[in-house]
Amino acid sequence: MRSLGWSAGVLAGCLLVSGCSSGGPDQAATSLPPDSSSSTPATTVAPTTPSSSASPSPTPTPSPTPTDPKPTRPIEPDGLRQDTAIGAEATAAYWLQTLSFAFGTGDTKPMWNISRRTCGVCGNYGHPIDAVIKNGGSITGIVPFKLRSEKLVSFSKAESKVLINYTTGQSRIRTSPHAKSGIGAPPAPDHGTVQMTWSRGRWVVDELL
Image (cartoon, rainbow, N blue to C red; front, side, top):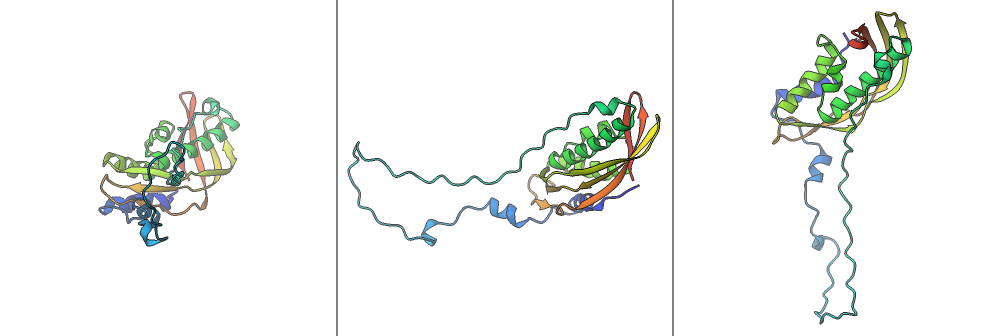
């Protein structure tokens, strides 16, 4: 069983303490901007009588705080229900999409819908994510997983293995409503072999090796 500890470890560590340490960008985003008196001195203007011909000076619009776009729930590919090599490759790619979606939203349902409950890596990811959400926390994607390539390793009408090369994502994790948020490790290249079996008219992921 393959254990990708960079993300599961972050989640497990956050669950063992009161909350993750706060990152600089998060803290800065929640603070108020500095008072204008600390920069350019204000110019004193004598009060005047309002005039219909006078136009007020335009007020500069503050730049919005950057926000992370909410990931879109991945759509099951047709290949999920095709007992072919192409179908197996499509399923492996889709499984990675569901994993990325879980780390972007905290929703593990799409991943579990195509994975066996005995899948060790699925549990390493899914159980800590579910625990965070159950505790009232949140998981927000910063950078999604990115599939670089997929390659069929073996195929039969009963089971298949597909090697996937990808770049891991990055998430912001808050273990409870009042906990500080923590940011996971930055994206990094990785790979694994998706092992799956054909069951009841579709592919089901058994493990990531």
